[in-house]
Image (cartoon, rainbow, N blue to C red; front, top):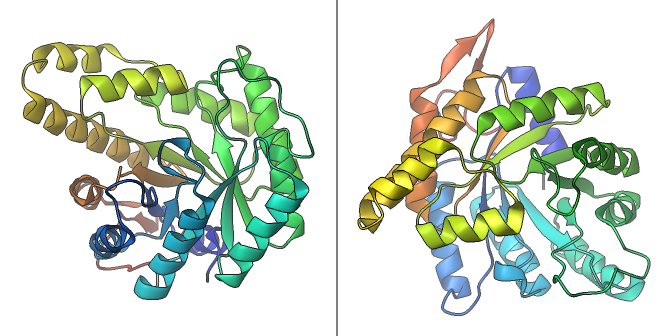
Length: 310
């Protein structure tokens, strides 16, 4: 399986930006068969890779994550990234997870600390922070990615400290980053400048998630600490009693974010699809429509037929 580092290297040589999607593994009514159907629709858009979250809502179904990641690669020949969290993990549990990932041929892993309950005690054990897991996975030969926070981590009030933690993850072996969602691109551009100044040299993919409803966006704001710009607040007010129009407006807003990031030379574009292929199709279509030459090279969106996948 091609690693994300290889994908970014090939894309850089071709003068383009990788486009990737994220899905979550089966939970509740979402069966493995349904996950296969979702993956099939995403595969038609030719993403550079697909990442699979540790679990939907943090339930910790690590086995399902590895199974879905392997299925996407084996059935659709698309590189995958399996998420792995370490909060509360032991050396034994991480070793078991590593063995499972290797058996399934997964080359790239996104190393995350994981969400901590508000009343939970401080983490103990060998994997207190994401950088600890990054180092362990890198030592095992994985291509390791980690999370980046354009507005700073919600538990860290010092933006400079958040950037310093990012550098520590790079120093531990991270070879790519994927950002937490954000709704205002100016925060990403400020963060990118700070990351460059701190010596962050590996690619940073911009994670974008459409807002689909008022409850969802409220949850995201409180979980992630993402700021809500005034255009979104106005859209929430305008379509408060029209869920269909609000959903459409949220997808359109995300498409505008992505095309702006594309045109400003973001390293990569990562769409949080929420297992809804129409979101991926809309975002891929917007990126194709905004494709334009950049110097002597070209930048494409997912599914742009001239280049194919990296």
